[in-house]
Length: 273
Image (cartoon, rainbow, N blue to C red; front, side, top):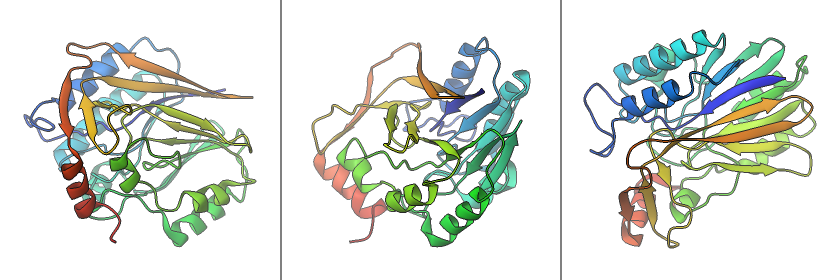
């Protein structure tokens, strides 16, 4: 069995900066990792995008140092993916290529880059999917998982609908018939799981920086304090466990965006109309 700690949306910033002027995301990541120190054996620690919020080299160094040390202490591999807030140059300088393949004791983790420069929505494109198809042409000994920030799981809010992966059907078609057991994603700041008729499991990790409220009035977006993670175990079956990390102020509203603000964000960062 392959055991993965799945983190996402750490939104790290340069020293002293607060995410949204409210959350110390470096402290949040440190708190999550410290709380999970006794998690047991792991094969990989995956951060599925939006590693940084400000795109600074310093923020990626923080991710490398904190996640890397935690992974090493659990004899696991650290794996990072690009998200819409990440910058490829700075990401690559510290964390390596924006798409990659990792062999974890016979289990393969394939990392994709769904980011679109300057935008919040995601896209993979024909060239990257062709690359993925070539990687998966030879099955791995223990199967595979794909990591991609923007999930093929349907978006939970109007904001995320406008910032969603634009080619989910193409991704799923590429995975059909392959040895991929699970797709690990983030972006929604809330855990979701969906198992397709083919048996493929789609997982979305909760955010480390904060969590979104999928029950908000449609058209609005609400963010509250909270931190979480997934443990993903892949063997004969795929099992995911949602971990809620207790911290002061859990559930406290950080901000709520009205319909006009959501639409403005979509005009700036969504798919061009």
